[in-house]
Image (cartoon, rainbow, N blue to C red; front, side, top):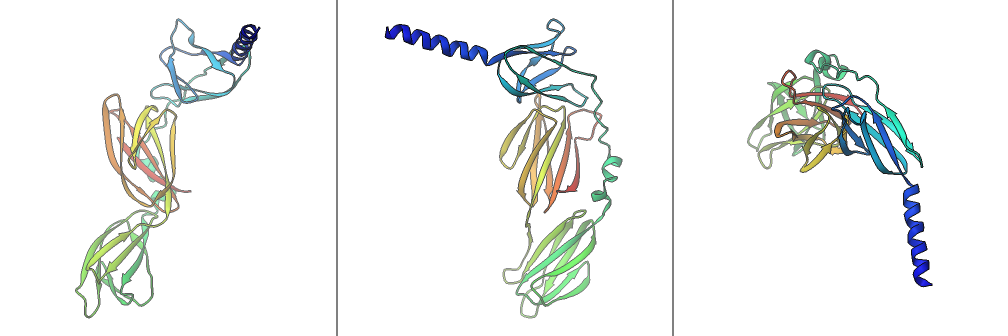
Length: 273
């Protein structure tokens, strides 16, 4: 009797599993990469009229289709007890990621930045590119500095004069500290920003802040990153590209990386968060 109950229970579980699984027919041209909920399911083929995915768990899913050189397509589907069909339309070419497009961004055309200066001790004389400023408050704001490198110096009777180079980024606020007590000019990064990575092709591996991210969708978004400059790398089919990116306080750093020979490997722009 107990054995019979156990068989009935197993049968019920098996039937329940079958009821909550279904099939998805993706109708599309051959040679496309098909993902379901970020998991690679295979390449579409003429034989299957695209790709036929069986025994997908019931419920809501995201179907993602990628084609090299074109914008990816995504579909939100709900799978019940019957097979469903996803029809992929015509693909749109990826927009050209050329330098003029980046320069057109309002954040990039603002070719100035600000410098917030602190020091130890508080009162001293600050020179930026030879122009002197008297610092008699905890902070000295020097605004409207042109993008690029600037020489900054700190002096005060009883201490050795110290100098350093600061790099102003477009629209950014950089903090620098003249530590006369230790004889160092220190760059202080404060605040947080975010990073968005787009790539051609869409599927690749991104390395950032000691972690690797398998990028399977059009965009990879990372948030709450301390302001500063960081190395970044991308790999695809044995190829590796590396660079450095600047995270600005209150800004989103947008990185477009491309493995295509005709494209610039790295294109960076910024926008307010």
